[in-house]
Length: 126
Image (cartoon, rainbow, N blue to C red; front, side, top):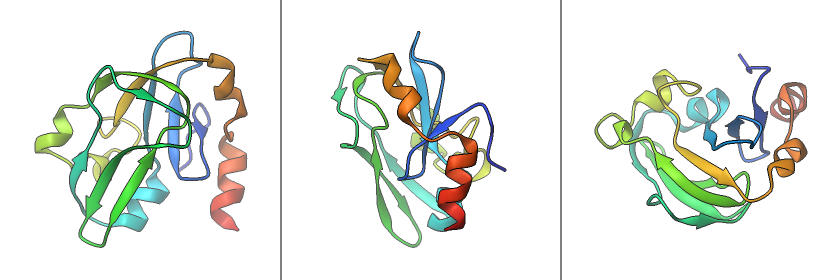
């Protein structure tokens, strides 16, 4: 259930893309499963500068409120507007319709520093 073509963070975010264009960011199946039913998402505005490791928003579930962390530094160029009315898309399709933001990377090579699928799987099994 861990897509091979994505990169991952220890905080359970995923990144799609190599940084040559904007990269798409979301949370993993593991993370949405741990959160339970997602009821609200707070995302940054387009144009917001983010730094790797800093909070870029929050996800509220029936269990808790959790921070979303920027996996890379860059500028938010798009947000998933569908989540305002349908935050449950994150539960239903965390790797597709439930994406969160798109970021134009300051340094595309930073994506290579993120975990690959096997590294992320090892993290979730420890």
